[in-house]
Structure formats: structure tokens, C-alpha cells
Length: 292
Ligand code: SAM
Image (cartoon, rainbow, N blue to C red; front, side, top):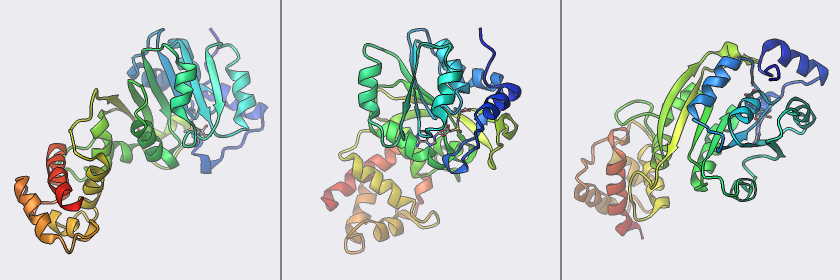
């Protein structure tokens, strides 16, 4: 087996060979600890039948671990300068395809249809670029891709928000948006020392396991998310105040908002952070009548 890419020595040698300089604007913090990488991959529970999708392979540190434990890896990399490097470092693996693309603009659904025909198990595994963590995760979930889940490294602060439960300071519209589609858990905290260059923030790995159907059933998904966002617009404000000021026509329909809260069995003086997903669903379904 080839020597791992993710050792400080080998990484430095690769970077020097190609005169590579990190672009902070692309969130380039590469992993240089093989044990951490193996642990991340273990959370994905891959088999030799699995397909793995990686976002941002960098110089291939995580990609090679995925290549060893899955049937095929498809990796999206935005930085053209990394393509020749990846061709070199990943040469020993014939089950890896690198696509030069911004994952936010890519037709991932189409790529899956073409590259993973007849795969029954597809998982996204990534050390995400931190400047776009949330848009990437939301894209992968909202497009309802045929994936089992996502295992990814991201800022600890965002991981905390994603896996937060009602009644905590981290619970908000991001927790609800992600937990609507998945079961979310923080599975590992990662020290800064395992990256080059070291990021300014603490990191964590989360595992998002897709639910067979969304956590709650609602009349209108878009409106449900609009209502949850409105309820958190100003965390210290009550539900009644946030909904009245945030929903279009809210002021005019204050009476209706009050009666929707009442019919849903939710005290108007409560704050958004105390509501469970089921309560948000009930509330948005009741409000739906008045706003459509
Ligand atoms: N996987 C490597 C590792 O763990 O060492 C690199 C991870 S680094 C945190 C993030 C990677 O994502 C970089 O290679 C960066 O160029 C790439 N990247 C940044 N924005 C991207 C985007 N919008 N689409 C695809 N790749 C992106």
C-alpha cells in the first residue's frame, strides 16, 4: 500500500513539489493526520459496494482513504491548480474521479445518475471549505439526492447549531432545516493542530443520516421554513412579535396569528427556541390558512 498523503512530511513534499500556496478564500485547510482521517471515514460505515462523494479533495488526503474503503469516489474540486496534483497523488487508485467544479453550481443529481448507476449506498464524506459549509449542506439536502447521509468536518460552532435541541442557545432555524431532513449528531471534536494551515476556529465532525421521510409532515415546506426563520428573527422577541413583524402582512393579520397560535396550543409569549419541530409544523399549518 502506498504511503499516506496525510502525513506532515508527505504533505509538505507534495506542496513543495508543485509550489502550491493556500488560498484562504477557498477554505483550504488540509488534514495532515491519518488517524483522524480514518476515524472520519469510519463514521461513514462504507463497504466495498458503497459510493463516496467528496467535496473539496485538496491534495487527496481524505480521497485516498475513501478510495481504499469504497467502490468508487467522485470528488468535486473548485481549484484548478489542484487537478494536476490530484492526478499525481491519486494515481494509485483507479476508482476515483475528480470533477473540476464549484459544487454549489454542479448538477450533483446528474453526476450521481451517471457515475453511480446501480449503487445502492452513496454517502457524502468531506472536510468542507468553511466559508460555504451551510450552503453546501443545504444544497445536498434540499436537492433530495439519493444518498444515505453526510459525514463532514466543519466549524464546531456550526456543528453545535446543526445538532442543537430545543431550549438551548444554539437551537435555531439551521437546526430545524437540517433536522427536518436528517438525524444529526456531532461525532467528533477535532483539534486545530491536525490541519495545515491551522484554521482560526475549532472543528467538529457531524454525521447526518437521511430520514426516510421528513421529520414532520407539513402542508407547504417553503412556508414552514419561512415561519421557522421568522420565529428566530430576533431571539429575544416572543413568537407573536416575531411573526407579526416578519411575515408579510403580519401586522395586519395580528389577530389571525394569535388565533393560529391558540389553535396550535402554543403560548404567544413563548420564544422560537422553545418550540419542537412538531410544534413548528403545527403552527405553520395553522398559519398557512391565513396567509394563502
Ligand atoms: N479534503 C482535503 C483535506 O481534508 O485535506 C481538503 C479540505 S479543504 C478544508 C477544502 C477544499 O475544498 C479545498 O481543496 C478547496 O479548494 C475546496 N473547495 C472550496 N470551495 C469549493 C467549492 N465551492 N466547490 C468544490 N470545492 C471547493
